[in-house]
Length: 113
Length: 112
Image 1 (cartoon, each protein chain N blue to C red):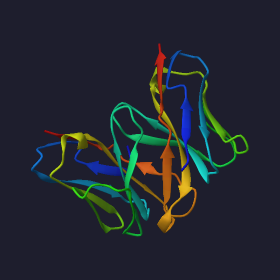
Image 2 (cartoon, helix red, strand yellow):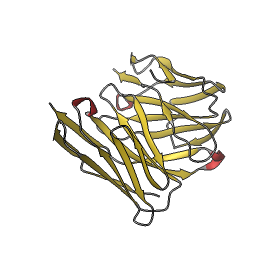
Image 3 (cartoon, rainbow over the protein chains, first blue to last red):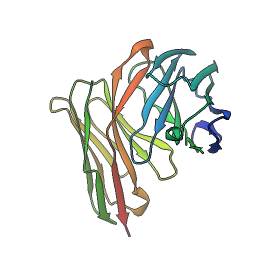
Image 4 (cartoon, rainbow over the protein chains, first blue to last red):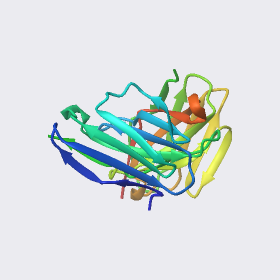
């Protein structure tokens, strides 16, 4: 069982819908990450939160809106997505100190109709 | 920006074979990670190393900092080892959190 829990596991939404992806960890990690992964490709970093503050935004379109309400939770709000946004969205967490492994969730498989 | 190259891209082996996956990177790093991803999607961190060699069960990871090269070895391979193995390197980013630069992955299939 993964220590990083992502919900939902699957999500199908239309281009006009608004939905949210959720990620939760209770390992005391203060760095949390969102990645997007297309089929047969490596993960691409989207956002990094450090001590609940957004520290990196990898030029992600504004239709993706991250939120870190507390040290255990990370959300990704979705609005007006495009078909090319269909992908596996992975959440990860780590300690902020140097050279620590990232712990990944099982991901949310998102399909945009 | 660090370039991370993995080889081979695809590898098919018979159960019991010794397997090696290679990873090269272009600039200095703080650590190298080996990750495993099963078809369901979840990623598991296998090793993080910045020097030398680590062993966990049938898995061995080595790194040569001077050569900028790492290898992941699987001894006595088993069909349950079938997965995508991803090499990633850590580089310093703002806010003291660590970004990973990923290789393209190696799809391993172990046949019974």
